[in-house]
Image (cartoon, rainbow, N blue to C red):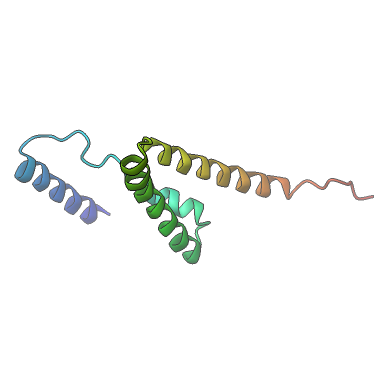
Length: 108
């Protein structure tokens, strides 16, 4: 992890100091927690992660290109849709995990 972080820091430093010559505030504005979202929504299963990665990539690209450029709808709507999907997946997993311990009918 240390080596990976060092290489990422060097790459970012070269990009900022060698290309732009100043700090760019929106250097990586979109892909903040995509890996975490994909792993959580894919239920930590390799097939689910790959499937949801394609879904999230298509949704991000579609919200940028399709909604904003062609329709004039702000691209934040795509981010809100992703947030709602993650919220529904999280609540579904929470209620399935916590609700399985409770029996609706008591055993006598």
